[in-house]
Length: 198
Image 1 (cartoon, rainbow, N blue to C red):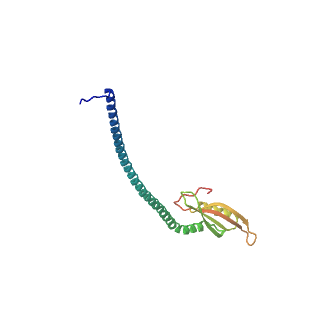
Image 2 (image 1 turned 30 degrees about the vertical axis):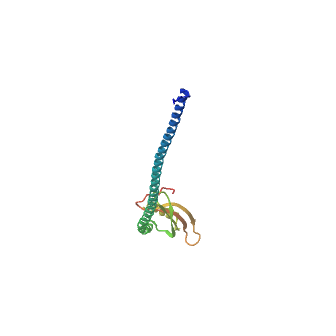
Image 3 (image 1 turned 90 degrees about the vertical axis):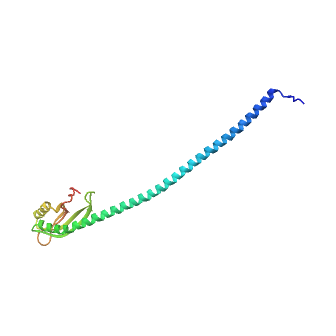
């Protein structure tokens, strides 16, 4: 029996093209899915590698922070040791200074001046000079010129320097005399002299 095609050839061509279209569409979907899967895998691998780098950097940063804290602790310990060494050095240097200051005080005290008390006060000053030694003398002078001579000799001394004559009062009982209170500064040769008025 002869085969008779009742369909129009155009309809057959359209069906053929329709099949090709859906086949191509399915292949394109498959290809797109494959590309998406590959890109996703590559990006996941890169993200994992980046996360591993970040974790390593965070670990290194933690180690460096610990080392920095140790360095800061060592710096503080070094500063404390240097302060202690400076204090010990100052004590070693100031030990003979007291004797020298007393010797100087004997030289500058003229006849007619009797010192009854003296007080040494340490006062903090500038960054260059750690402390200033203020001395307060109380005593009696036979006359005002004797007190002035005492102050002049103290000013010419290399270890003592007058600051101010605080109080002078005439003694009312006994021999005639002037009671005085005198402030001075102890000067240590070789160290910066304190500025006037400090």
